[in-house]
Length: 185
Figure (tube, rainbow, N blue to C red):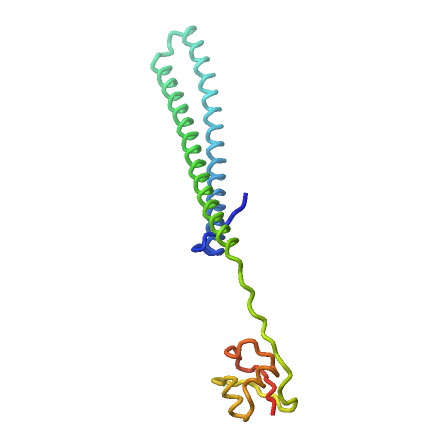
């Protein structure tokens, strides 16, 4: 299965969504474990009640003192337990379907994004070329606040092109304070 990113959704957004879905899955897993434990406890309790019911039935036949009211309560309790068990299983199925739907939607969205990314090839950035056509003598200047390549060239009566070539500056707009530049003279 190939997953693709939608153009309007960034990788970070998808990462966050996947992380959120993972957390949701962990919560569902924990809740499912709790529900399984509860179901197991209900089954044990149900088995105990059946044993008690059988025991009571035997006792009732031997003893006339056991009332039908106790048997009725036990029967109702068993019905309640069976109902709770059924509800628990239904909520588990509903939760699983919801998670499956969300995962399917996310995968579909990611596949669309991957399709769009694959269909538009990235253009490589042009590689700047530098030449040695500048005076080889000069001095080093440390860039100060507010200075640009052209202001430094004017200040020392040099040429902007010489400074760019001598220092192999890719983007003349990105010269930072404290950078040491060779100033050809």
